[in-house]
Picture 1 (tube, rainbow, N blue to C red):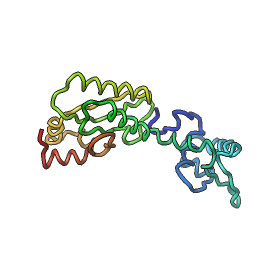
Picture 2 (tube, rainbow, N blue to C red):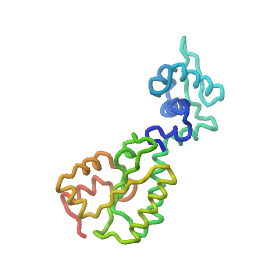
Picture 3 (spheres, rainbow, N blue to C red):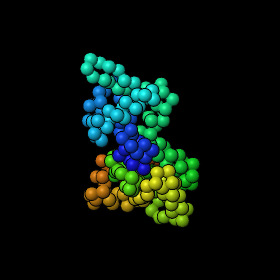
Picture 4 (cartoon, one colour):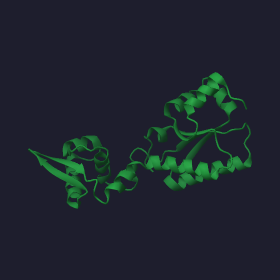
Length: 212
């Protein structure tokens, strides 16, 4: 899955970026503005796409003076599908949360995306990075199995590999106290999938401590 341009996972042509621009706004836009925002193709190509989409009714075209303004027709039966394609990352996060909630016998204190998946700038070949803070210092076979099962699930759902950074509270505290650079990445990027928000957990570990 292309995490930077999720719609291209299904719509690989110039139609994808054009529809993505239109789906993100409720304001009519000119073809030139859509081309600028899409950052893809030529202006002529974008206008051809808009003309074709208007012919299907998915996009409305309104003459305003010497220009034509375009708007996604949200009443169209295909509009919901377009909008859902823009939120594939959100759907992935929810599916991961549901898997942890339903399938993990031992729940993590926190699980959060970081890196390109969290920032939304990863490509089709990017790994999906997940920080998991397990509740105990040891790793037993059932824990390994549920982490492996989630990795298999994410690959099946997206085509991307899941890279899990699995730490105990003690290991996380050590990372924090030693100023490991990756902690800054977690603090900057973290998007909660399950459990406590990482920033809150980090503050508790760093300032108040946690009883094991």
